Amino acid sequence: MAMNPAQHSSPTQWSAADCPGVIPLFPLAGAILLPRGQLPLNVFEPRYLAMVDDALGGRRVIGIIQPDADAGDSPVPSLYKVGCAGRITQFVEPEHGRYLVSLTGLSRFRLVEELPVLTPYRQARVEYESFHDDFTPRAGEDGVNREAVLDVLRRFAQAKGLRIDWKGIEDAPNEALVNALSMMSPFGVREKQALLEAADLGTRADTLVAITEIELARSGVDPDTTLQ
Image (cartoon, rainbow, N blue to C red; front, side, top):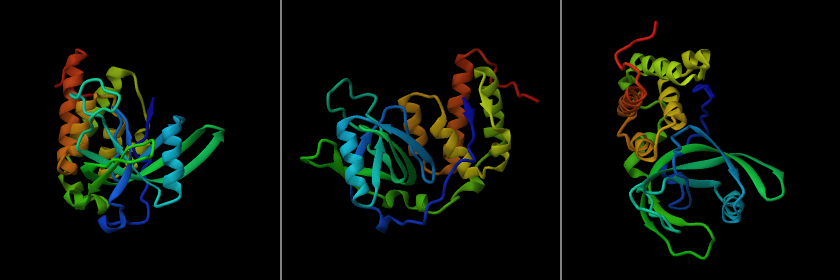
């Protein structure tokens, strides 16, 4: 698996006022979207094909949100209260009944209420005001301990045999680095939700380092060993 956090995009600047208050929901366990991040989707279920069709006819906004890990099995699983809105910025229909879509993250949202709808996909009323800094590119970068992030990434890559695009790492600003690594990280639902809900970029970076250290310890890698 090659990792290149420099592959982040900055869409035309949006604000909370530009984002729709009611959005379709795409529940995905183990997947998160963050502001200005890119999330590729392979869409083939009929209900989500319909969701993409409808979104393309409007503001092209879809909400990515995780099912609650503590909710148990259910045909209609409960959802976490925080997700991230993304705008469709790439769309390809390679064959009938399948879409390849890329979402660019706009802002996290808080789920206010899920709505009774006739559409085959779920919809909810959401608010963005709790995450106003999400609309400001590179907000909070000064709070990131970049050296700690790079150190734990080196050790994790070595332990897991990952290929890393270190040139891309060097070129990536702190926001792109932390958010891309958080999105690509192979951690569980609860860990990914903690990364999504982190109060600011510095806290997300610290959370990413802490979660990775725990994973390294479970793998039998000395968390205090620094690669040279």
